[in-house]
Length: 231
Image (cartoon, rainbow, N blue to C red; front, side, top):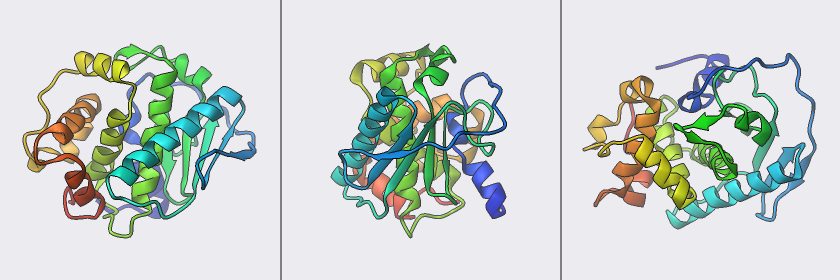
């Protein structure tokens, strides 16, 4: 699917994380100051020190996964933790990556917690950190020159795999119990239709597919490098 640059931002702004009830968004968003994290090249803007620390931890988790998978970072990372998301985001989204700005946006923990549940389980700080991981994974893949712009399902496959792989084990176990499945049998089953029809099931089964023999980091690299899950 081909869209304009403005439409591209709206379309790719983390639609697969739009899993919860919509909330009203104020018309304007206050400008926040960016503060560096301990991880080099990562900066976070947040009103809450706890939110900033959580975002730095999520970025560190995502960077660790990509480094272990042999996928180097090529650009600095900027994360905004905000009470509401940019207008380009779906009304039900909890996180968003705007490709033209190379910037990740994540709801503040207070705003996220008001949603009550995420992936059918109660929300906690570990869940909030996992949202950051998801959005940073979008950033890290977006900066790869081989990434095919039209591969919505490929982008989300990688972001969900990284999110689940770095997730608090107890939280991951609760989510996988709440969203049962056996994992995609083959790459041919990982489709835009599967993502659009059941985002939660797609997310959990992407991780289960990643765990199967012969997939793992090698398959993630093939997706990021544009050799798998292209349109």
